[in-house]
Image (cartoon, rainbow, N blue to C red; front, side):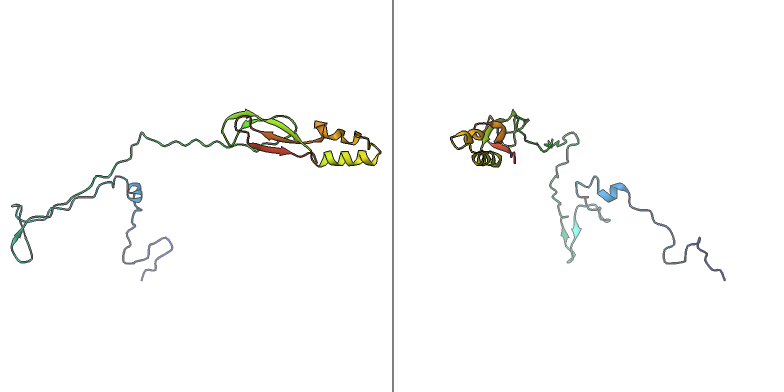
Length: 161
């Protein structure tokens, strides 16, 4: 009596190793057209006998050609990744997301929180005669909006406070 060791194959219905499928079988390369039916053995008169014993014509197979992909035509799609833009109080060169052109942003100054706090603190210090409105004339105390010079789209805002 022989006991199979760990290195021996156990006896079974199929002890022969089978090879894995080839690459062509896996991805079905060159399967663009259906395979024609195999010829039937018998007389080569062109007539086949039907179930009732009478002759009949062989069926005609119509195949529609499937377009073969062109190996030279490769679809290339270019993707541009735009880095996040940090807006400050100076113009920025960037690609406008609205019109897709390289631009240098136009700046617009608006009164923000720092402007109003400066005005309020000047009022508390006694500058009531109109000097408290000076922060509204100083660009360094106002918020900055960045616009595209081509399409006038708002691209970003820099808030001072």
